[in-house]
Image (cartoon, rainbow, N blue to C red; front, side, top):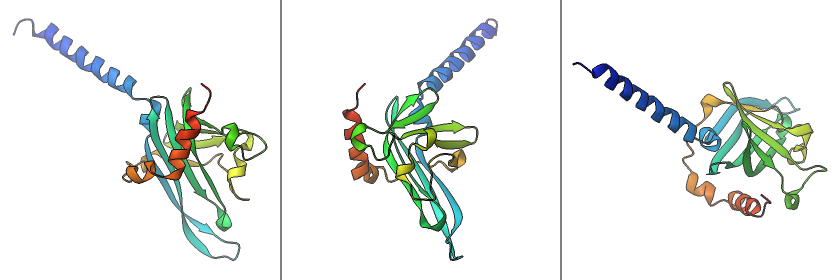
Amino acid sequence: MRGSGPALAGIVLAIAAAGAAMAAAASLPEALAGVYKDHFQNGLVTGETYRSEDVLEIVPTGPTAAYVRTILEFYNGHSCSLSGIAHVEGADLVYREPPSKKVGDVPCVLHVARKGAKVELSDEDGSCKAYCGARGSLSGDDFPASSRRVIRYMPRLKASREFKEALQEDAGRAP
């Protein structure tokens, strides 16, 4: 089997190059795509307890953008809810509230980023507080990356009012 060494090395290099090209082709929205859930014990000021669920959905809408929707639950029944199109900025997906949707004193800017074994949410200086009840915040919440699942209800999600509005708002966004 004379000459098989260089041929085998060539095959190994070709496989490695193909793997690297596939990894590079996966965009951040694709890498984060899915639904993340976190279940936990919650409570009321009366002492009653109940189970809560935080949800984060990420749906790629292009190589550098994704629909992001989150619903977070907090003590005493307070919650946060936000949805829109986030764009890749560095290693984060960043949702920037369009002027037409402005709810608070300053525009909401929400970062979604993979940090080790977690997918973290953070809003700059509490800019997204208007989307939350009194005890809620979008900053500092995270989801175990291992909780990510394929979104099995994609047709229903894409038919939702929130998804359609987010696409429409993003289409009118300045480049």
